[in-house]
Image 1 (cartoon, rainbow, N blue to C red):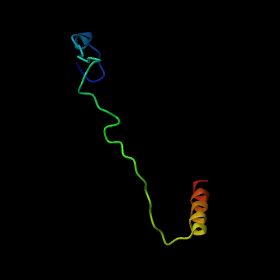
Image 2 (cartoon, rainbow, N blue to C red):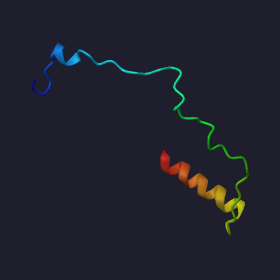
Image 3 (cartoon, one colour):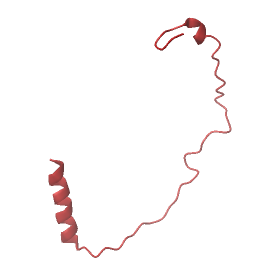
Length: 60
């Protein structure tokens, strides 16, 4: 069949083996980490706030 055409014979026998009790699933908590993040900067709080204000002005 050509591009964009539809043939019902292509839709037959498309069984999917998707067991709900699959032990090979992905655990979303497998790589959870607890800790803290810190950083050092030479900029003062006022400098950072001014920079944030400029970024917000650029969005408008």
